[in-house]
Image 1 (cartoon, helix red, strand yellow):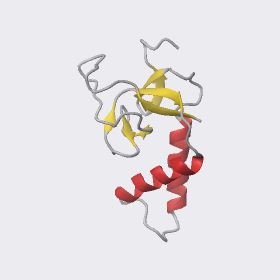
Image 2 (image 1 turned 180 degrees about the vertical axis):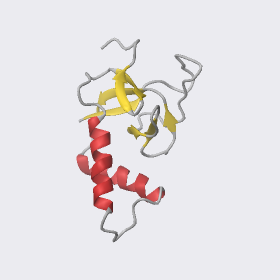
Image 3 (image 1 turned 90 degrees about the horizontal axis):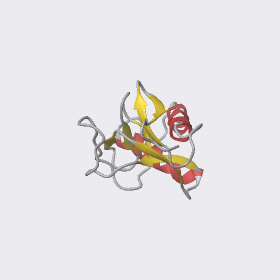
Image 4 (image 1 turned 90 degrees about the vertical axis):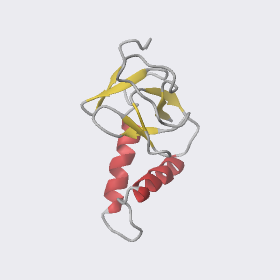
Length: 120
């Protein structure tokens, strides 16, 4: 399944405003209007890479629920939480939609776009 992972390690910077505090090969989702957040570490990065990962939808859902639980948005037994989980699932799976595997993307005002130096 096509998902977004971090594009560069913490030693690589395209510009002075780039950063990466996520873990290697961590699945990313929207964090802010201009940065992704790692599902496991809850840390931010400015660049993501589209990749084909060998994970199941259930594994990704479990990671999203863990993230939402840590942030206080997911409380067992609460009815609304399935809507938030579905919204986050749409974000995680939707970020890579329309981009080829290997494409480096950035967020601009909350929307993914191909990075100018990306070869794809």
